[in-house]
Length: 522
Image (cartoon, rainbow, N blue to C red; front, side, top):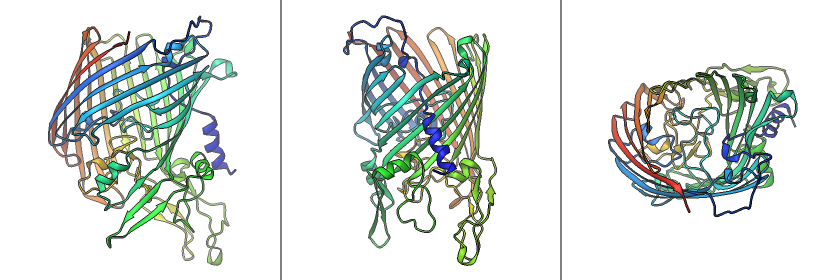
């Protein structure tokens, strides 16, 4: 195992993810008798959207893929869930959920949004099925979204083993905490891809999915210490499956990804190579990830967090360097020198979040800056017998030469500011705008009892891709105002207005009405 593989493996063993009270095990509390038919929560939700143009960005994005670009769309949603917190007094717990949707003008005639069973032993949780997992180290309601493991696409059915809450490491006097996950699953959008590309452009069937993440907290909230630092690494890949490449002559090239034990290992610890690769080999599958950091300060009446999300598509973006010491002549493909090409730290997402705990009108305020133009530079050159220099630029964020990119059902699995294939009118599964600069603002508050709101506003300056840049940069302004009112008896009504203006998404305006009823099944 080389050094890079050791880093990957150490990050995996550092296991990571979700932090929710429903997973807590309360030591010392009397358990009582297990009853799997008790504490079942239900949720019934109806939503209608109307728009001029397509559905505006923030009426469509970061909703776990439960959205549509059609001018008029809606759904009726019904779900039940027994949360793990029902057994919080036990060393082990059982949970399950089913969430089905009857949509109008969606990419599916019916949607099984969530269907899962899960079990907890002490602090570890095993989940099997489709479940909506929130983002880590970001505000799920106000942020533009994580760059790797976001909340923008439909859940992927998977088997997931997680340490969902921070676990105190048994040293460092309670000042180090760890959480994380590892998961394997399978994409479910085969039929949608067939319809979207009409089998005239690249598509892929039976593609497998893998994700892992690890987060380390330096701090001690149990002692009410206000300062903490959180560090994280999120990684994911799509692999296996069958890739189809229709040609202009009517023939189709078929590539079959590996699904053996070695291929699963290369998904966990990146290595191997993709089909068709010979001399120049990359890691098998569509490997990508993010380095994360969040610095928090929480006082009695206010809080402040600074955070960063550094996305990468390969080791040049992950470690900011690449080997560049090959020989010449007959030794052109032999490593001869200790020489490396160093890349700049330019592409990054930076954010600041302010929490005003006693201010009802503005209780949370968030500002984010995203820069993705660099992508390890505009030059990609593999070493050759005539030129030994190796420069691994043009990383093509969210796109991939073999697979259909970091998308599920046409939506970006990460951040929705990467213009998703669902917007393409030519039936090509490709992100056509992955080089951009963006500013994003989020504000929320509860100005009166039962009332709450959120405001999102985003400015984006897009440049297309390195392979197909825009002739002129396109700009875009997207905004959302959403207001919710709790009627009592666990009824809630929510109204929203969104708009897009500019060359990236066009001029779109729309409204959305949602009615929600929740409760406990008796």
